[in-house]
Length: 148
Image (cartoon, rainbow, N blue to C red):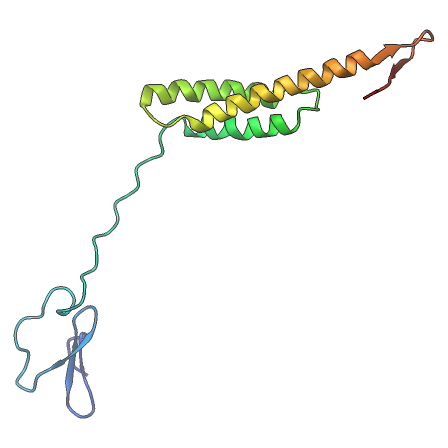
């Protein structure tokens, strides 16, 4: 075995050198010149290391929270709690104001505000229908009859 770890000698006496990408045969008279930097001719060079990604713009988390809460609020409008809808509107308006100051996208925040408002409107409509169809009976009991 030779002293250089990048050089290997086969049993037939041929010597090979590792240039970082491939094993190359060393001619019998010795190397033709100093080792090359990079891959052998005809092969593309590796690209530079990728740069670190830029940090996510501030306010994006609020936009995502607004959208998720808006979807939850619009799909759970039958619940008596309107907490997800109100939080969707609050987070969405804060995210929209941050996006205007920073010049970033605000589509998810707008969608969250719209879904939150729609969820509140659906919840209010549901409770109006419930209240219209419910009465207190003369014996003090509460009764609801739903008629289409």
